[in-house]
Length: 200
Image 1: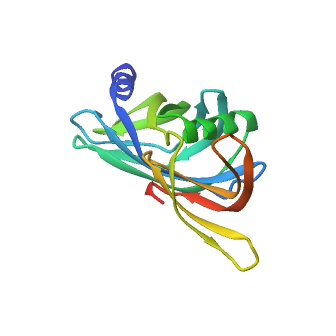
Image 2: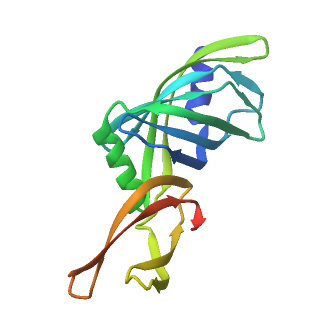
């Protein structure tokens, strides 16, 4: 039973359709996500709650608690409520966020899960590990829409950002340099930036 159930888990798929990262501090951040689970076999089952390690290309940066999951042959939507993630490796977390922002694709490694699956009055212990492939922000593409100059000589820029990824992130206060065609810095702007999915 354990070997058969483990094989089904290994062959199942996990697609993350939404990730939200907010309220990042020097030691933690808030995270919520929505996932689609498929290929879990013809029989519905229940997977007990478990804790997963989250890693990017630079290593593990935190752990995520998954709730109880009830699967079905038609697929299952999992909503993971907002929870505070303690950062175990800041360099790994920074590298993951850099990959989100700059790369066209990236992989989130979910590992070290331990759970029990119950179906048809039987139960089996399994280990859980998935490599989740994500679309990155590729930059993201930013367009200047307008510039307003105040009587005091300061100015306000309105910009539009295209985010093709399922990830949205609160960057807090962002410092941005404006440079001319020669690469010379002509101004520095500061402002709060929240990158939602799609167009911001």
